[in-house]
Each structure stands twice: as structure tokens, then as C-alpha cells.
Image (cartoon, rainbow, N blue to C red):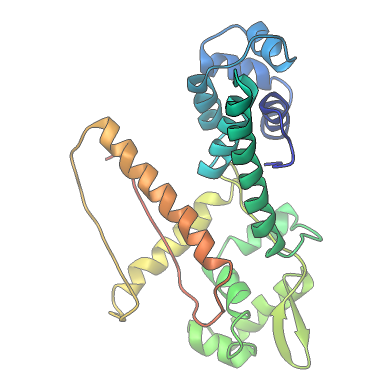
Length: 266
């Protein structure tokens, strides 16, 4: 999501290109149940605009998170505003989101490289790769022994993971101690490795049921409710994830934990 873009039509055009490539407008038209020519006409900045309802459908179609949806909707309202007072109102909202994004982005190290597909297969093939990658940010877990002992993995496997992470730039070895490197990775929802990633840490969640540690929390609930209320609960979970990110950014590295949430139809 490029928060520097100030026109909702430019942003939708960019997202269609990035996420879908050629044929994106046709697929979007199918999702909106309209003619592709209508999509093109709006995106070419004619006098026709999408409705807020259509923009929400587009946001869901493009799998945008809550902050991204909010930004896109505010850009739409800014463009459709019929008075200067309303334009100023939405302009301030857009600027606030842009400023917030800059603050968050400033706390994240720049990506200097990315893992290739083979390396992603290795990294997401076993939970320990991600765990070792993260745990080196905690000062007391910067050696192969302390890492292996805490995560309960063998010395040989621990060293194999550390060598892989070092080779790929995810961590570095400085004076006999490991620390985070310059390479950062993010797994998209559409990635073929996303299933393995979720399965790995859900298996670890099941194992943690045997530990009964004070910090651990497990919750399961089977419910019957309306479709609308189910969507409300989903929205609450999405807001929780967004709030979690705000807490995580400034938090000092003291403990390594795993956070899993599941909501699905039976």
C-alpha cells in the first residue's frame, strides 16, 4: 500500500496492477457485477465515481487490511466532497493516516533484499526457523547454546538454522553473538507457503497445552450466530491485530511468544 498516493483511483489502479497484473480490471468487474468499461471509465478519472459501498467491495476483493481500507475510503470521500469544509475534513483525515504510516514505517528496518522461493520453502518448512530468527533480538538468546536450550531443539539443528539465516542475511554473527540482519521478509496471504506457516505454529500451540505456563492463554468456542454478528466478531479480531501492531513497535525485546487466532466456519 502506497500511502503517498492522494487519489483513490490511482491507488486502485496500482493495487490492481500489483496484485492481479493483466486482466485485473476484468476480474474486478466480475466481483462488482458490472461491465469492465465502467471500471476503466472511473479509473480514467471521468466525472463518474465509485460509491462507498463499491469501494468496500473493492477493498475486500484486494484483501486490504483495516488501515488500508480506511485510507482508501477517506481518499474516496475527499474526492467526492461537495464543499470546502468537507474537503478540509477529509484532507486532514488522509494526512493523519499518512503521518501515522510514516511513523510506523520509520520504526521498521528497510528491506535490502528478499528471500528467493527455494529459501522461503526452507524457512517456512519448519517452525524453528522463524523462532530462531526472532529470538536473537533478545539479548540473552544470542548464542547457539542459549537458543537451542530455550527452544528445545538439538545443537546440530540449531546451528544449521543459524547458518542458513546468516547466509540469507536474516541474522548476522558479531563477536560470537547473533543479531538481526538487514533482510526482512513478509509472507503475503496468497503465498503458497502461508498454509505451512500457519500449520507450524498451530502445532506448537497444541504442544503448549501440555506446559500450563502463566503467560499462555488458550481459548476455543463453538458458536451459532447470525452472519452479520459473525462479521462483527471478525472485525473485532482484525482491530485487535491492528492494535497489537501499535503495541509491538515500541516494545523492548524481552520474551518470545507466539500469537495465533482462528475464526472459521464449521
